[in-house]
Image (cartoon, each protein chain N blue to C red):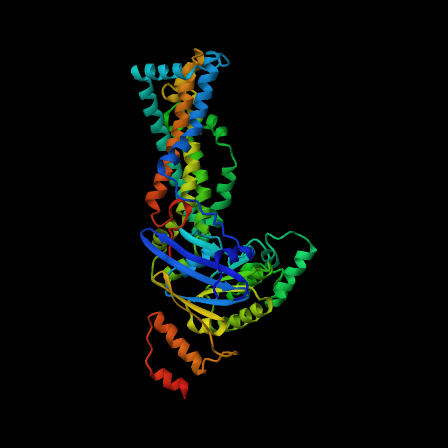
Length: 243
Length: 282
């Protein structure tokens, strides 16, 4: 295994009397894209928040790179700052920073919106600005907390391509928390499923890229993951897909 | 295949340090809150005992306690308190009520804002103390003059906060409720007022503070009972202990008003997270 980016051993997090995370072991290698699936309330966001230092662990060892950024479900842009100001917020001021900020905006296709106010952006544009804000910090670990959940279906597909593309170019380790099985298989090198506080599945995605939902391997993995999440599909889908 | 924790550390990984505050025991929190006032009291006691503060400047804490006993014993303090609290309460009731209604009207209805807002803003800039002589002429030395003064003083903060809070109502929520056939009044009752409650209560807090200030102003001039009268008397006889008692009472009134609003916040807005933090989910 190459150099690690995330190292978690025996992680526990308890809310009240319920152990949301109960003895999690997890490794993510540098440059690896891990998708973490789980139904609502299974603690996947809690795991992400602990890795992002937004929540604390009750027990266990958690190690992460010093440089890490988060893209949340909502854009969380400061309404009183223009888009470029939001992307470079907290970075040292200066022409160089503005230039890298503009480059990051160009990468996500928002070059023309640098001086716009966040309230004038569409949902997809705002989320792309949030992505640029995360990437401009050159993170070694990028934490994506259901970043596409609030977008419409078409925008979501485009955003998934963009994120896949950007991650291949910048090679941060990525933890993508999502409900969407197709999204996980499309993007990730590895998928894990969290259920009742434990990782019930952690496997490398063997489907060849570019990943096509019509690929039988895609469909098989999709069915297995959905079964892990408690959704059982009828076999009719299987015959339809394999034909 | 797997990496040991030591190897991970050697590779430059660090433990994420979450800046979450652990829940403090209630007792400790309360003790920390009382620390400031106690320090002030101790400083007062020490400077009185060492002679830095002579009784003709300010009486010592012990003398003040004695004065409280004396005033309470002969019934002066009880009478003064009930008179003053009635005035402040009545004035606040009228003032905050008028401010609330005007605030909702100008904040929610466009016509209301156009008709009323500029007029109220002009009146708002008049310092209420400037109205004291006018009210004397209008009402004479009566309870009405005092209550009216307190009412005027307390209505404006309530008005400004309410109209601001109402204006920030979620328009989408209003639109949704209209589509369910709610009347305008029902929308105000179900959506606008609950939504504006935080602003409303901060307005109430300002109004309560102002009601005490206006009370002092009203009572200092030509009154025959109340805390202000007690103070005027004490001033004539250079009784710094009684003056200190009255000042402390004003302070305690402010504190009680603040506490009352906090309790109201908790009672009226059960849907809000406690201590500004969301209840931990997921």
